[in-house]
Image (tube, rainbow, N blue to C red; front, side, top):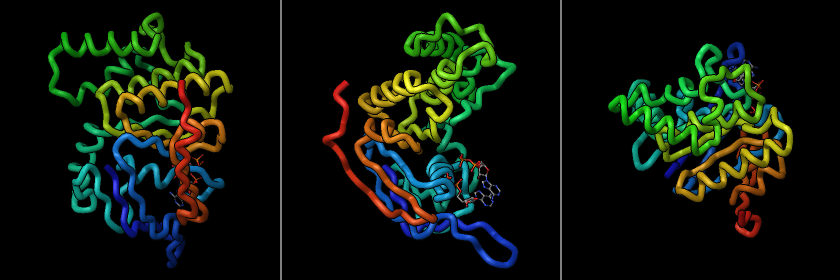
Amino acid sequence: MIQLSHLDRTYKAGHSELFVLRNINLTIELGEFVTIMGPSGAGKSTLLNVLAMLDDQWRGEFLFEDAAVHTMNRKQRAELARRRIGMVFQSYHLLEDLTVAENIDLPLSYKDMHRAERQALVADTLDRFSIVGKKDLYPSQLSGGQQQLVGIARAVIHKPALLVADEPTGNLHSAQAAEIMDLFKQLNREGTTVIQVTHSDLNATYGSRTLELRDGWLTRDTAHPDLQRSQ
Ligand code: ADP
Ligand code: ADP
């Protein structure tokens, strides 16, 4: 599904270049659940932003579903990302002046959908994520765990092939975190490829493969199918 070859990402620091990602070579297959770990400043968020196509200041090759992302312009990349990728953030990134229902409807505004079909999909999604009772509330009226449920509902309502999450449970209590991870596992079972950045060893057990970044280098790539949870 994803292939990165010789990918570098640098920042300018005066006249020199600071490497944040160095010579990343990585293949991720359709249906994988991948965890990215490593110390703060290692480049995890940067790699995630590259994969989510939010960052385009890199060099190297990036194939996504056989399409050459490195040859696309900004508009083509944004269009591809909107159609195929959902993103979840540590601090939820919900729009505070929109209701829950309006927040999760947002990704559908890019789609050519009939009004009734769109309303039905929003209703189904509210139901699936058990947030029907919250649909007319604003994000500030919800707990962190509930806000993240809305964040995930919004990220997957258009049925993306890839779900990318940066510290999705970083602001949550462990019970809420487990609920979110169970949801990721379920989406993954249904065919969504999942890539998460986390500091949590527990979160990592939900995935089937853990990558480690250090100082911009990919230093470990461990498959652990035996840890795959059965729930
Ligand atoms: P992590 O997610 O592993 O904590 P990041 O990807 O956020 O790491 O950052 C990796 C490195 O890149 C850090 O040293 C950070 O300070 C640097 N960095 C990130 N964004 C920028 C930026 N916009 N300008 C300069 N340096 C940056
Ligand atoms: P995280 O918890 O995801 O590592 P950070 O606080 O490191 O978050 O970074 C938050 C944002 O600030 C990111 O978008 C990152 O790219 C940017 N950033 C990080 N380090 C720097 C830096 N040295 N200079 C400019 N921007 C930075």
